[in-house]
View (cartoon, one colour):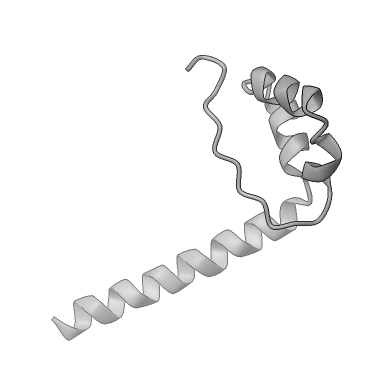
Length: 71
């Protein structure tokens, strides 16, 4: 049981490190990713209409949950 818990903790830490490294290395803003992807045109339009483009391009921590256009 101890081995399973230890393995779970180690795997979680590795995933956390890998995810934070990949996120930091990309350098793209939320707005850039949404615009370049092509599946978030409604989100991009709403961000532009609300005047939030500059906000999402600035430093922040931001989390955006958005469905694709198909949803």
